[in-house]
Image (tube, rainbow, N blue to C red; front, side):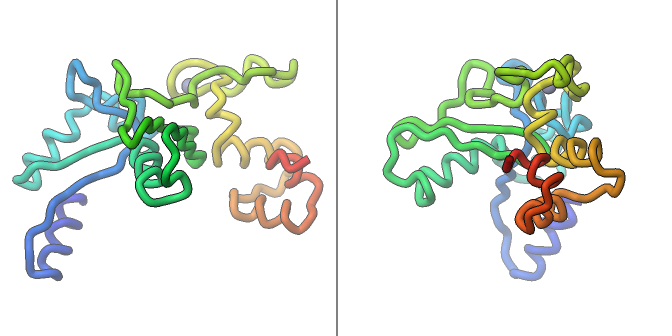
Amino acid sequence: MITELVLSLEKMLGQKGSVGIAMPGAIAPDTNRLKNANSVCLNGQPLQADLQTALQRSVRLANDADCFALSETTDGAAAGASVVFGVIIGTGTGGGIVINGQLLRGANAIAGEWGHNPLPWPRAEELPGPECYCGKRGCIETFLSGPGLTRDYAAVDSESQDVAQIVGLAEAGNAVAEHATGAT
Ligand SMILES: [Zn+2]
């Protein structure tokens, strides 16, 4: 699908482009295979090599939260800051750290990632917590994410809602939605 997308865009533009992809997870420095991706089908795969073969060119891959943190440092909300911690909360909980304009990668290529730590001050009813794709239970990502929000809401309202609907209800003053989003 990625090959088809790239080739169709190049046909439309009439020229060959370069390819860079912001992705979940990280490329393990020791194996060059993907790890820590919440799109779990990617884990263990040589994604960069596969894409380079399929596209017949060099392909750059980087963690999406790292890309976000570097982008905001370069010309966004954190422009001019010497130390930046960028946080993404979406399907999961990710982060990236930029120091003096340079991305901090870390020995395992996961510097700044904080989604698989436990809740700092869990209440009794939050233990042991939901199962996480990483194999543990109660990771902060299972609470601070779109799926976590919809699960919290579904626990107190039989009418299921997606994240956008829950946020809309919270903004309209719905007490259940406000509680699920942490607004109260
Ligand atoms: Zn986890």
